[in-house]
Length: 337
Image 1 (tube, rainbow, N blue to C red):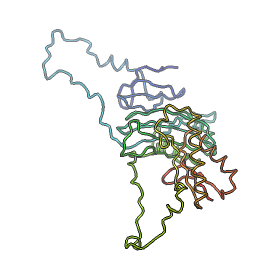
Image 2 (image 1 turned 90 degrees about the horizontal axis):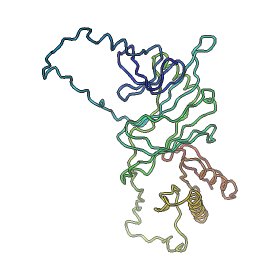
Image 3 (image 1 turned 120 degrees about the vertical axis):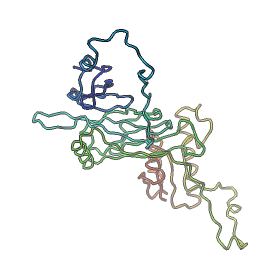
Image 4 (image 1 turned 45 degrees about the vertical axis):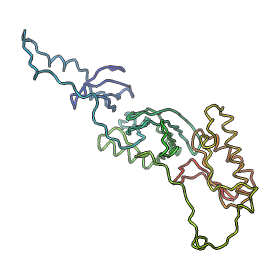
């Protein structure tokens, strides 16, 4: 291999020096120029020694005076960064087959944080709805975080890239979490790769969110005109004073259930979440609810799978679905009674 990680190289088309940060394959490198990383083909770079040699003066002038105006100014340490959201980026790794055609071998996947905030995240890859890979970590402001590779042939297995974000520094004015899912369909993927080749680009990206969402205001129930006018009505609370009020939406995220969750084991956390689910499931039955939404998050899917297992044995359940919801993404299951 001509180049190694850590080598200095010269980008031929821009005449800039870069550091080699990764060897993608036998034809491509991942380089860094002043904090910006991007892939290049090996025939687009060279070692910078010849350039450095030709720029040097062969016969330097001795005792040359240097004036204040001649002092070289320092370059700014960082370029201006524009905050345009959090993205997932796909880098197709290409090669040439025996017939001379360019083929895609795999996709390198990165989480790109182009905001000034730091996030804790849970990333999960699913094939046909089944978990295959999971990662929990932190992405810093304006950081490019490498997630993993996915073989190109696996993209026929309906992959879904699921993300759940939490602010590293909690903010009461912001939502406790935000989740979203990216699905790549083969037809769309081929179109993206063709577009990259036509425009001589290396990556394509999908926006996960532009700005971390503000906390939604609590829903309020407006009194009807009759109630406002003082008309009599029955107090259902008094009639069912021994039964706790039901909820149409139950959030099972552990931080919603207890303030002391950091000291709990995974088993204790799951047990508390399932007890809470059973409680509000029974209340929904008692109060003759037509449906109940249970927010379980994405994570490893253990809580979701356990809830689905329980629901399959319940005779009161007409159906339950774990489809994409505009508020909760794929992190919630709706139960129909």
